[in-house]
Length: 285
Picture 1 (tube, rainbow, N blue to C red):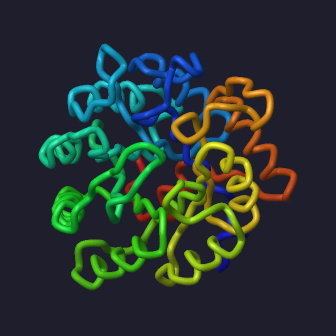
Picture 2: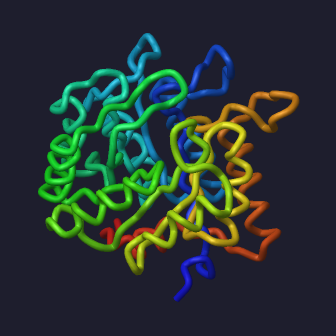
Picture 3: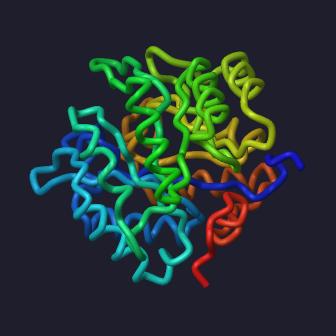
């Protein structure tokens, strides 16, 4: 079945490691603020959440204790029980490999369902994100051992090829979930040609979501509503309601706009339990 005919997966990326509260005071930084945003957005239609955590100064952190506190609070809330929880393993700010992997060792209700796996090094607008092949293999192997499904982050065509290498090596197993992130300065752009090139190389049967960086978020959301399994949305990728007035957005506003856009295209919004089933994840009941 064409996954674009199924209910849309809304993947909330509320915080990220870069989004600046000085530019948009609505970026949730503390555990309490992230929790509040996620719960509100789940009520509005989000079925998956891509989590980053910050320390007490607001700097990006890989502290497994912070992830543990956030995920346990989420699971204690009725809205968070079935929510698909993905934890970041980003090393963009110099975290060691073991620091990046620490969140994968959480257990019980604090164990994430998924974890991000970026499949190559790349340049962002001002800095580079380094992901060496052995680093990626290490993280993929740890996820496989811990029963954490990778959220495969794709910024260009070569990353899909490397995903296929890991699949051939048995380090990634189906069902596959790909996030195609469009609009990065050194990656695929939010155009039909670039999107088609990426989608045509995905493994058969993959679930895939679209995300847009900055001004590309709304375009990616529209494309995702009519072509993709899901859409990633949130202040991690874009701070503004529009590209003109630079009105600060909120995560809830962005999720509601996406849900309304899906409805305008006649697309239902997926419930967390359904998404868990599509991803082969254990339901909580």
